[in-house]
Amino acid sequence: MARFSNMALDAARKNHAKKVSAVTIRVGQMTGLVPEYLQHYYPQTVAGTMLEGSRLVIEERPVLVRCACGNVYTPARDNGYACPKCGGASGKLISGREMDLVSVEIEE
Figure 1: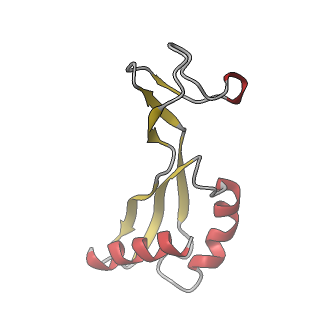
Figure 2: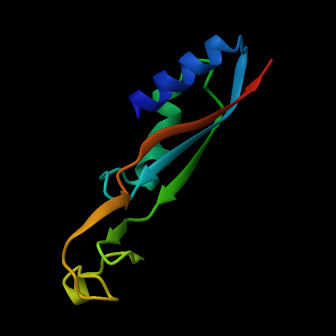
């Protein structure tokens, strides 16, 4: 959480903000970050900064894999995480590990 708040503070300062009204972050399901916990601890993390009182908006990103056959799918335990189109077990992760600051809504 501190990483996101520091990045948001840096962006706000660079844009000469006096106050921030919202911070939007993107979090992949494989990061281990729990959106409910992020929401819960956000006010404590930003207390005393220009982020205090701002909303935290979380965009959750699903786990997506691109199989060698070209199919893009969400791996599922019930089929051994294999591609549902060809049954292939290898693929490239294309979504799910993101931890990004998307935007900072500032008040001038």
